[in-house]
Image 1 (cartoon, helix red, strand yellow):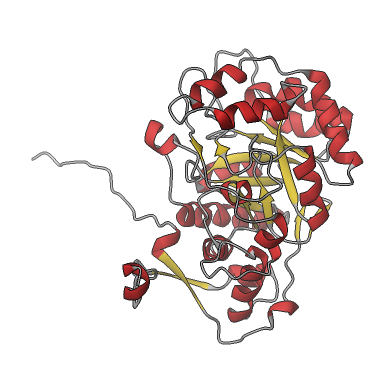
Image 2 (cartoon, rainbow, N blue to C red):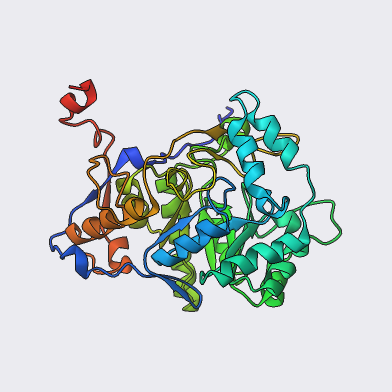
Length: 379
């Protein structure tokens, strides 16, 4: 008698399917500690700006630094290919919806100028901000030393999916342990979504890990490749690996949930799921300070053979100050994101992020619709 073998599917949850359970103790929001650290660098709140051309240029990175936060600049983007990156960004903005991807592809055919890497890094540093930059594993060995020599503080190696073990035709690919030893600056790696991959990456000595495959509004990896795990489950799994690694070594490495968050509630759910911070893209594209003035597009939109991103137009409807700290009259949680974190921590009785991680999450598919008939009907 033959037995049928099949893959078992486990449930996985996104932000709209879970809710945070309030605590038995409450804390005044102004008393909670929001500080977030990457190695020796500490920031005032746990929100990073993603390495997107539409968002992070030196001016935006400096402004983000002045707020006490961190913005990451893309070394493989337009900032390091064109002396006048603003003109290149404007060309993308002015393209038609149908032609935007091809315009981005054409613009990213230009060579990366090594002298511009140093120039952009120095601009950020001279503006008084901590400088973080990002590039893909394929270009890391070539570009990272240039950025470090120019004074970069944090280096991010980022791709759609990154693992500690990689098979390629290269006789010797990127060895993360060697990269960390040679650069002498904190190295963050991303992106991943699983316990095993996270554990292996942590064991290489990285200073932080980005979580998320395909959840962002500008990313089409889930449609193109069929890969991804909803962000709450992905964060839970990666946080479990971080905690296991900490128990084994005594070394705590922060994880950063990257993408898929639209408002303060989503951010808070990511943090309760175990994230130490979050990385946002489209939210920052809405700020007046962002260089693309209300547009955003993914890092993989310009891929010459298989684009996995799209240009969108969230529009300009806020400032960096209002987005992060308010004041605001909006009732949908898209402004004063830091205030939302403080208040959520307060109602959960969490005075710091470690305690916020202990708050309970429940599966709650009706959390956004229960009792909301008038909101949903538009009346």
